[in-house]
Length: 547
Image 1: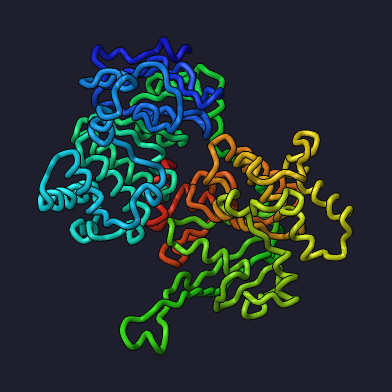
Image 2: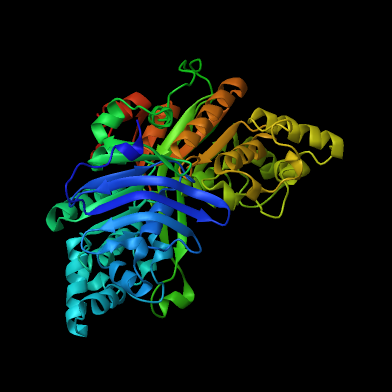
């Protein structure tokens, strides 16, 4: 299906983009893109990282740095955006067209309160007085569903939760009553329930104001739930577009079919271990607290405490995956760090039948042996791999600690074997051992992180959001790799995530955490198909899974 021939049939589109191309130097990153958005329409632009989605949106506002932009982008009442002067574009940006960015913490000014940042736009675009700006900022925050908007208007970005920061960004975008809202991955950094809340908010605001929305995302579930039409991009080219039901129901392009087929698939050993098999991880009434300052003179003499995990009881059996699911702040990662021996805790906690020698954070010989049994793969491989070390140094680092007697040649052979196990071979990647992390894609970096964890031959891998930073197709590749390794090596996984679809694909048993407590546990079928706790029911419903 030709993307350029399927322009929207509206006689008067709000935005008509024709033959848009974007080039940085000699590299063309967007090529011949054409689409239209009608007033009040919701169009989703989907594709993997690097497909050109965000550059396309930024080019419409002429914010793509030193890019050379050609083509046409006609906005109702403004003419061709690509032919306007910079002075004229200032009236368009934040006026006719507003943008909500992926990560509000980096998009918001940390030195100004939320109210001040909204007031700045109102003063610039609407010419309101200071008092009018302050009142309008509170009303906008209330419109986006932020509780206590008058108080939150005086808060700085770091004092708000992730969902509240994203709502504040939306309030800023709505300040000038735009005709078109560009929403660039507005829910990627949020929990599943917050994603649903932000999408519902955008839908409600779109109906109330009549604005059109261009949603940029790689999350196909969000597209199904939110958009009227969808346009699919691959390597800078728009390969397919049409109504959501048509494109998802009968995709014409090979790339679209591959995207739709890349949802997490379950491929794990379903047989339970024999009765009486001892668990590889067992916790009983584990409690983790963080010290907090007390106000006034009392704070000089003692500290208060914040209970991050309380009365956590669970077990992980050999060769199985225990999913730990919950929203940010539920205590998932804190519990994982206690199991890894990285945080002090109280209660009973055993890995492979042995308890950490207290305090668990001490690197005693006994604790060092225990650390070999349980390794971790983090959420963001780019930040968890040292940029100063080569692949050989990164993957072989654990051997220097746990098998110091190995010679250079022996260690290199083990590194090569570990890399080969995760699908990275010298034949496919010349000079593999000499490369640095920045020379690899996100999925390849996550494979490096898995190889680093596997090289010391652990019993347990703690997987802390291992795919949330990856595109949908790369996510499926990494999950398939983890499933294969589990079958071949009999590994046990403690899977920390807020992605219910990943839990369904990977887990045998599930525990659900809320406010530091385990509120429900059982098999994956029990928890996802028949959740009993209201919080679990809300999580499952927000993920779009029928219970």
